[in-house]
Image (tube, rainbow, N blue to C red):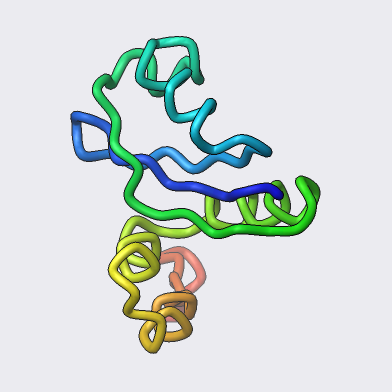
Length: 103
């Protein structure tokens, strides 16, 4: 089995990772032997995990969630899946250069 997991760090930030042994990996993070990011933000707590059959699947999901906004991660953590798609929509604003505007 494998897991994608989200940790909440002491500073309120989130760390997303994947592993084939969630219990061991969490202990490594708590002991300061996890990732450089979490080492400087101890203690950490596990706030979310998903189980997969293969490490490659968990790693793929990790990379997906790492690219998400904080709001989208928090919706996943809280189980508010119905708003995930609305949080995924990027809002672009067209910028008009002043020099290209005809006066």
